[in-house]
Length: 356
Image (cartoon, rainbow, N blue to C red; front, side):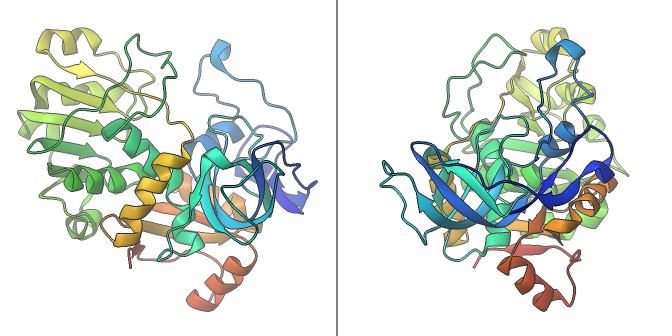
């Protein structure tokens, strides 16, 4: 099969489109013919060698490695002990996450545990479905239900979502992959949502249900906003502490990327809970999200698409930032369909907001 692999850490140019062996199914697994693969930050963290992590935290990576966990495709074969799916079923999922180069998502075929998969929503095509898993499960596990007992090494307490009905939630980075889905889930749970992004995303976010919009290039939300119940910082990092002053006592701050956060003492003084978790594969949760996607209650935006062979260009697009929704690689029939739909194999602008 064809796959994207890299043999050393580095810039997007280390990604090679080359021949690779077909994956071997284990017990409880299926072989999926991949039609589309969604890009996520862990893909470029892996490609770069996790250089943002302290050396002692960097996982071991065996070369050649293949990025990606998010796929949508068609079941080709099933292991003898599998009854949940049969050949021909359309599925999507976040495969074996967290893992470090073994998922083979940027490839024509992937073996996948059935526990990581759900039936693809019928009203979504493979491109839309591949845009969902990691971002959707991240939003779900932060906001709705954790769904696992894996310890977050950055905090001693278990992450617990907070009730959202009737609450005010501010989402920083609301136009991105996690942000635009978190906005919709918070609205679905009955929250009032303040979306923070640049002005070019305002119409998009209001269409998705934002009650209030803040253009961070004109107004610092930490200067103007007070007494919100929850801040979801989909950007995260050390700067997340600036949002503590916007949160009422008893409220919470959820930084999606918590590494480098240094505001724990201030949070304690203000009576604010700071909590995060690492997303984990979960086919059951994805099935619940699929029902919302299929009904149109939650929609997914596709920023741009690239054929598998142009994965390096897709990573460059990710590095350019200001993404609206998700970037997706197309494979096989999906790539051909996308070329016919758009007049070419590369990016689409403006993004497609997908429901049914």
